[in-house]
Amino acid sequence: MSSLLWLLLYLAPLLGLTAALFAWFGWKWRGSDMKNRIDEQAAQIDTAQTALRQAEAEHAAAPPAHDPAAADELQSLREDLKSAQRDARLRQDEASKANEAALAQEAKMARLLADLEQLREEHTSAQAELDSLRSAPPAANETAAAPAKPKRKRSTPAKPTATTATLREKITALESQLQAYEAGLVALTQEREEWRLRVSQLAEQTPADAAGLGAARRSFNDSEKRFVTAASEIARLQNQTRVLLRVEETNAALKDVPDDDLTQIKGIKKIISEQLHSHGIRTWQQIAQWNDDELRAFSEILAFKNRAIREQWQQQARALHEAAHTRLL
Image 1: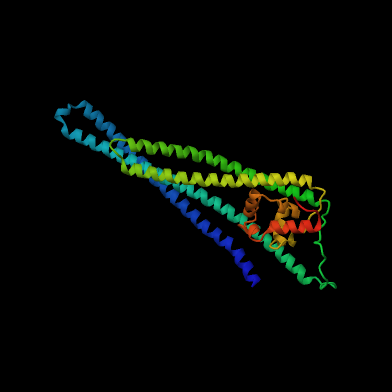
Image 2: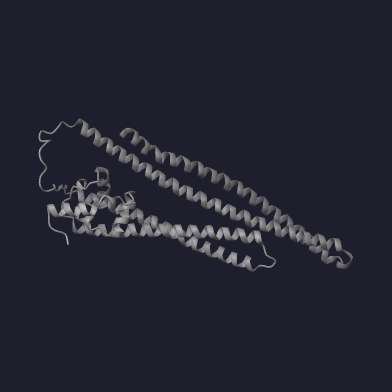
């Protein structure tokens, strides 16, 4: 049963990655096809503009009263040019959306690849632990009673340094991600304002361009949604960065304090304990004193929504710390 579960967990990101790849190739094909259509539309506009200029020159040279057919032809050419320009704008809007969707698919693929790599590492670690347990001989005092106080796991002198280095790398990665999203938000802000202005101009235009106004409003709404999503992601990354920076400061003060065995908290197994260690969480006291921001950040980092609250990690950590050491305020 456990093997089947591990297989399903292993295949889930891979299947998601495959779906993302097909979607990305679809968007790339659509974007390429859209570009060809835009080029064709631009060629039609150039042809219409050339014909209009020639007709206007001929119309200016000939007396208007004696050439009503030329005036009608000139008006028809003007209408054709307006129609071609309107179609070109719509094609450009569609191409812009296709390009943005392709970029979103690329970002999704990058996240899926990272999840897949993390799952492989967890699977390897769990398999190694399972093999170790299977090969280890049974302990002579296996049935002995548990001690009254929880054991405090001692760390080697090099452990805090390694944890700090890993934590610093994660903070740096978060800061890089945050900078990329902030740069994207600036571009989205500008795009949103441009579409807002475009909608305002089309709404005041006479005669009204219903098709162009509808397309502009859809583009504005799409831009607004992507802006809100990016702002939400930035807030999430900012909170995680602030939390890990505080953890980094706390670790500096706790550098001489030995590690606690976090697996004594119900719900924290070896893999989760290693993830917490890599993010600078080494003691029961740190978990017991998490605030709302830290709870939210570590729920996101560990990809276990509300698990720490549901399994009462903080209450368990407080009880373990106070049983082994001193009472927390």
